[in-house]
Image (cartoon, rainbow, N blue to C red):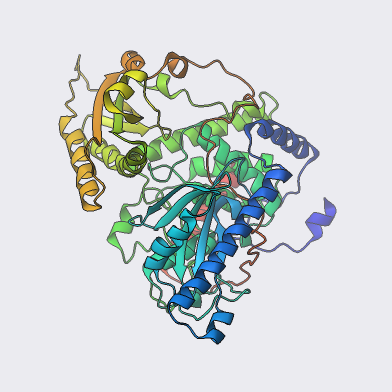
Length: 558
């Protein structure tokens, strides 16, 4: 401990740390207990699965290299150019962060040289994957914000995006951390590369990666168990949770995971939103790409819970968060603080933090959203589109003067046998509603027809625009009371769950099918960002730092 205190301390983040205190003996005990409680939830991958992932990534990397050479031959590159030409797979997301769970998917980007067009990736590379025996469930989503090819490779789910660099080959030592690699790129390529750049920058900006990873594994599990892990539905996704945990690590650079988790809940239960969470001051660049900046972009001023990515071009990772979803997140963070206070005082154990939210007992009123299609393939496509629009329904309901909260459960359900007989392939989502209490009103009659119709129109319009609408694709939206949920879901899902300290290790708990991670990078790519950017001075950014400091000061006094 004295050795730790005597070491010169590097400053991480936009403020000085709150505490440099070294871990106490009890912190080690609490952290060991935390690790033991996490194990049955499948958040740690065994060596066999880790090796399997590396083998699959290596095979995918070889397929990419083969395809790039084959395409060069078709496009009449000279023999000397063909010898030099190369491409590469880079991983990102939880796999690259080192926090992926058992059975989770891998996010990766295929980086290709200039002779390879985006259209080639979605046509000829897609066709190449089709002919691979080990690849199943292959599908392309070209119209996504970040266009992606999704598939299962020898049992591992992979989301592969594409970036074309303006260079004749992709060198083995290519450093994606350098901003200049983004120059003159298509915006979709910039977004594709951003995943790697953000992941590497987060790892560079935390004081202790081991403590960060264990704390993040716990926070991700907690968020999934409590139904607040989903970027697309307006909660927080993996990057946002990682940034919040990383900021906590910056403020407590020597703390172990058990303390970091408690401090995470303490800091963000007091955070003065919409002041942004930053891991570093945004740097200047001559690339002039659009960045999150409420001084310049009026729409950025509307963001209720900004959590800013640390790599250029800096973006708000939580632009989907709404008033309702923020209220739900904050309620859960405050609950997490109360539980972890009890744990650290020895009045409770870690299993209490990971008890699932009893969503179907929480509200008196629910919206049931049903998406159905005639075939399995159409259903997969239809569900993806409907899910991407659910936040439109939440926004419509939030604007209703009689509704205070519209809380969507991130998990979808297949529906009962009656639904399948009537509608084919079915997925259902549930939204809990809280109505405003009106004084002197015995009964509140709220008509949600208009809000629901606006949502349905938006979905069908989008389906028509992207040309996926087929006969048999339908949406049904019902407003029901809690006592009528049994018409839609089996009793075992609805019944109030008895509290249990541990999941059944033989079961893969629902909600854990999330992005995975291995180590800092895969064997295919281990580059890390070492650089730092010159902060630009502005009153807004100074204010951000002061606000961050004031939160830290309040915490010092707590």
